[in-house]
Length: 335
Image 1 (tube, rainbow, N blue to C red):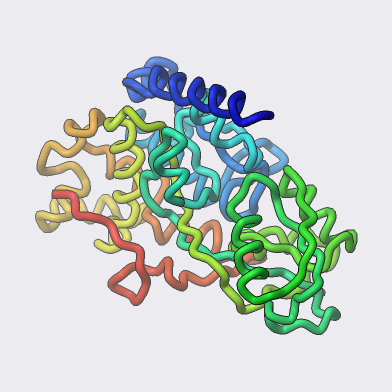
Image 2: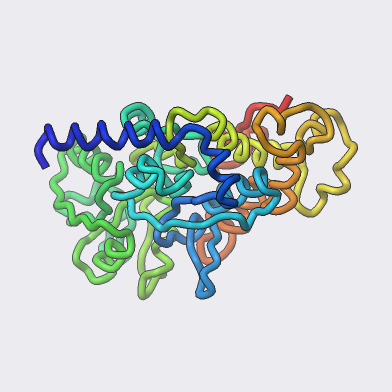
């Protein structure tokens, strides 16, 4: 594709994005569900079982939005997308929201006609290697063949890291994540690189997960979060505050199990649960929008524990712990 054709295509997509983004909430209410773009299968983030049921922290964002809008967290339809096709699907209006372990960057936030609504997982890129390779540090990877996925920030980060450290390397890239995993497992490369959360998740798919380890090096910042089209502030707000509701609920100790007992509590809790204020009205949803999210999906901590802290992933909260507990997860107040 030449530069002129590429420019014309991008202009067309942005024009489509502008026309389809207005009044997204009305369109979603009209059809009765949220169309959510997810991964093609990443354990802990967005994956489906043999009955077609989706789960994961990214899936929970879409479930939270459905709970806020319809008081029904199951009013979601999922579109599995590769990294390469995810942004086009959102720009064209094929999906309403992209919740697919997607890194927030300047280019994506300013040049694609898209807005990131927040961060539901703070991550960083790392490396997975076979233990028998005898490597304990990424600086020992000179001359390695590196498997990664096309259409991601991963390729750029690898290039920066190896060039900055004067290390030679060869990229072995595939479009689909499962193709990358299969290539690495078959020995077509020495190293598999992606976000560290993805490495822990994809390691579970290898023939012998115990024969591989994630190196300690973190070579980038990868703030992952839900994405919507620019030009529709109301839909952006619904997406953003669905996430913020879950984070605030955890901070305030409101869970899916104790929410009924928290009703009629202190002023901040009353605002959270819709007993005071017009916050739902301001968003264009029910006054009990946040209470619906917490009761049906859970707070942020419940979602993390259910999807990421359990075997076989066993991912610790780390920087994704609440700010009040030493992490950097933080949400503006509902007031």
